[in-house]
Length: 556
Image (cartoon, rainbow, N blue to C red; front, side):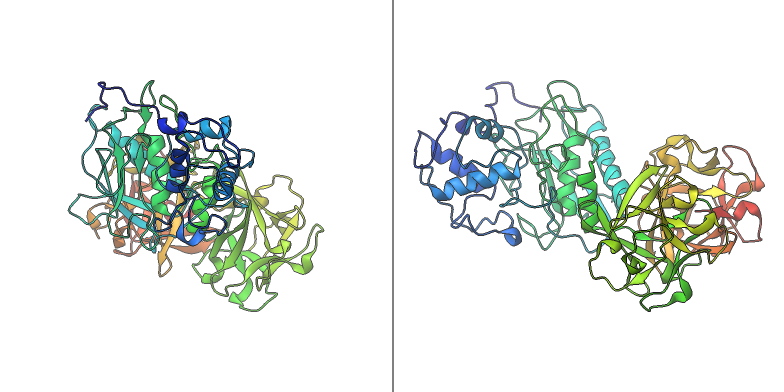
């Protein structure tokens, strides 16, 4: 249904817009509407002084709607102001009224200021999620509104180890997406809200049934793709999918997860650092950490589980002493947890000097155990210790397995650049990288080799799926490398396909020396191979029995 033109839609929260400014103990006409707003979004309850983080915006609380700006309402106003980066005066002033009358998300806000900008609820107990589309909107031609939502899923999958797959409505999706009336059955969006979603099961605001809802108000709003006079589907979907993943609202006004929507005709399609840190707190990246200059990975020596075991570089072979969970601990900083020992990467003796050894130790929270990950291009990062400001470094720029990891002043060498996100995978025989042909977003697009140029169709992420196997996700599409048709035949093509958990989508890296690996398909035991040993751009990737050719060796 397209947006109605008769009668015209009232401005968002028009009843609040009509209320005069007020100070403590004043009761201007209609002030109960301000209190209803504060109640609706989780600020004004039977005791506004008690934080309700565990029951974010709990609907069973009795709000004190008195029509007077009493002390409870003043506390609620101050919380609203603090969360939304306004001076926390506790009075109803012009700036507060102006913000309250903006179009916004229907879910409540954190009820008290947080030391963080982002806030979270709970996470799904899986990282491969499904969605389906029900009714669309007549405001947008063809399938383009669905394409906009698909792009929003791709954006989130590039930020965290998540995979999304579109299914039919009768295939038990985790999320059901539709456009419809403002009063959609589980809530009423009339007058002020563009769309609503809900948190993962276990912390839902509207219940915990699956599928979770993502409903766009098509009765009162015009929808578009960034053009004038309409709300941008991709921007609103990006925000609502954040809720589906477990993110609550952020107080960072630039963040996608800020409660107030971008105005009609504007867009907000890029995740901020705040959004990315939030989703990674819920879904920490886990996997090997490769260094650029050698292709080897961070490894705890001898698979030791003892405190003080040194970190060095080693050919990747799939051991849990080479797998690290990158877990958020505070704004801008993470701890790196070795999966075999549950100990963390640590600068020995809390040293701040160049050359200090990196080892593992029990987590105790020191700044020598907290690391900042700074992007340095093409999926690589410098990993900087908080206590010293120095970067993890392979000593002496050595190419050898067993070379120690130390800290050193950042100078930009490839022995200081670590892959912890999507990055290229390079063929030994040609020097070209894995590439999705034509930057296609289509399921079934061929996977080829091509000269590296930095596109998202050439940046790949390894997400562990158990047993030493990984799904290899393509950044630009959110799909993964797949042996076509689940074929076990030698020569079967490699394509991109939405992740569904098949063994033809699971790959095991096995070291073959000098930092190179072969990638073995679980279902067939065959290896990723450049067809015909071709060195040409566009050569198809296939599976083939391993015979040791350089066209079967890859640098991660």
